[in-house]
Length: 364
Image (cartoon, rainbow, N blue to C red):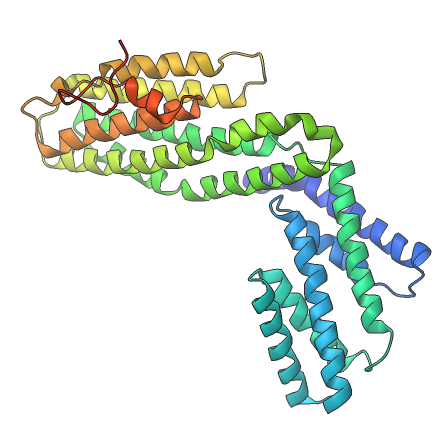
């Protein structure tokens, strides 16, 4: 019940958008365009929107093009070869092949195939049902876009929450790894690794909602002034993804370290704990509104303090696993500093050098 309620709460506005779009599309197609039973107008509106915020403009375009291709090919061929089982199969093959050739999107091929079947079975060749269905698809798609522009989801809110959820998991994973290293116990690290491996769906949701946010900020005048903020949030997607991937490697190597009973400098464990705290500050920064604390400067300051302690002497005379743990720790710090707004070269400069002449000179 709890997870179902959470999903419903997250998708409530998109569901309302779909319901309004369906009703308005039917009204426009019947009372304004004058079609008798424009069943495909509300269907097109719902399909073009869906509950997913990403690629709604693309879905609308694919739907209209798919319907046009399917009806065009179906109407032409059925008028020449008649209707029957093999004719239906041939029309579907040709319509879907043409749609895939034009574009690889799944909706365009599906709509081309279903529209070709409709022509071959329900709409007599030369009947106005085919062109009317094209118009209905266009009406539904345009109404859907209009609903998004007039009743938009906040373009930043969902993506910001996605990013915060991924960072919360990352902080929890790092803390569990630190706990396992302190206790020399593999069980917390095994749990951490399972949690780290389950983050990909959250990262995928972040990218999808960022794409949907960009569409909303482009078509809705209400949110044109959020474009810069959305661009800044979009710039964090790759560094967050990279950080989580590096955290997985850190967890795997920490597990090996404990199982092999390898000697580890306690200061390395302190660094992992400090990094877990820094990730929590970064999560709070992502959720903070403009002008609120912690801001990017505060998050960067906390991460810089962790970077200052990631010194090569922590692994003097250490084994391979300890070396990898420190190396991953340094990589994660660089990734997270980019989430806090630093350029990669500036993030690298925060780390103590590991060689005499590093490619990126350290900060003085």
